[in-house]
Length: 278
Image (cartoon, rainbow, N blue to C red; front, side, top):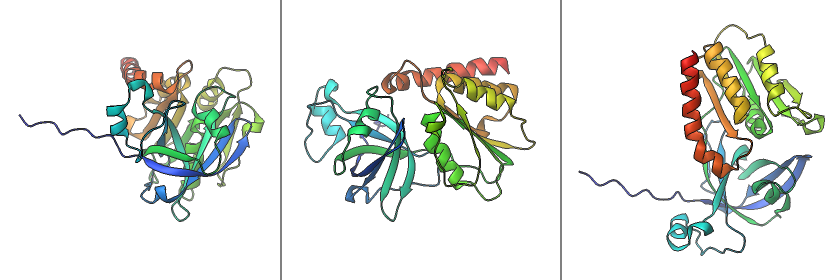
C-alpha cells in the first residue's frame, strides 16, 4: 500500500498595508501592497477570497513566517487563526489588493483590526480561493446578498458582459450603507432597519418576476436567509445545482471558527432536506 503524501501547510503571502478608508459607517477598506505580493495572482473568478492570519496578542513568531513550523513548535492556543474575506479588487500592475470589512464596533476580530491597522503594518494571508464568475452564456443573472457579500457582488457587476440582464439585490442596514459601484447595472438596495437579517432580501427575491431562460445565480451571506433562498431556487423553482453559487458566508450566533466547523454538516443537512422536499 502506497504511503499517503505528507500534507504541507500552504505558504502564506506577506503584504503591507498601503492605506485604509472608511467607506460607510459599517464598511472599512484596507488596501495591501508590497513586494510580498510579487507572486500573488487571481483568475477570472469574481468571488475570490483570502484567509487573513491573526496571531494571539503577545505572541511573536520566528522569521521567516512558516505555518508548518508554528504548528510544530507552538501550542495550539498560540496558532494563528484565520478570517476569510472576499477580494474586492486586485490591481496586478500596482500590485494592490483591496479588501472590505464589515465592522460592528469592537465585535469580532478582523473588523476591529481593520479600523485600527496603520499603513506599513505587515499582513499575512492564504489564498486566493474562489470559484464563481458570471457565465456569459446565461440568459439572465441573479445576485443576492447582505453586506458580507457586497464586495463579491460589486466585483461581479463590474465584470458582467455587455448587455447582460442582471437582477441584483443587496440588503444593508440603511441608506448610508449604500455604495457606488463602477457599473451601469442597477442594484436594488434593501434597507433592513430593525428587521431580522435577510427578511427583506428573501421577500424581494420571492417577489421578482423571474425571466424566461437559464439563470446563473450568486446568493451568499447569513446562513439563515441563504437556506431560504436555496429552497426557493432549488426546490420551488427547480433550477439546476450547477447554475447556482449559494453559500452561507456566516451564521448568526457563530464566529468564523464555529461556523466553519459546522458548515459542512449544515450544507449536507440542507441539501438532504431540500432533496426530500423536491
